[in-house]
Length: 90
Image (cartoon, rainbow, N blue to C red; front, side, top):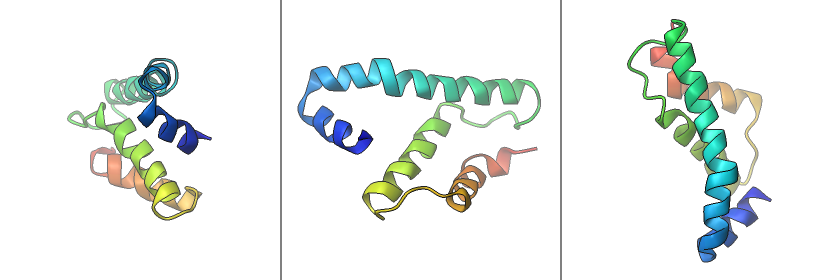
């Protein structure tokens, strides 16, 4: 469904705006906020680019769906998280 909506959004600027403001944007903002809170609590090292975390996480998911034709499993998720925040994880 998300892939179909994303494809439709490429052709429909109104749909793209709705998806950005009501779906993708708020979810990305929530991830950024959680990462920032984790940094404040000392769970993640200062210096992690919180704004890039949802980009890398969702991009990985889309890559596996579209390019590899499979869903993200637990092992993939662990590898992605390690790649995104592993060097900054305390």
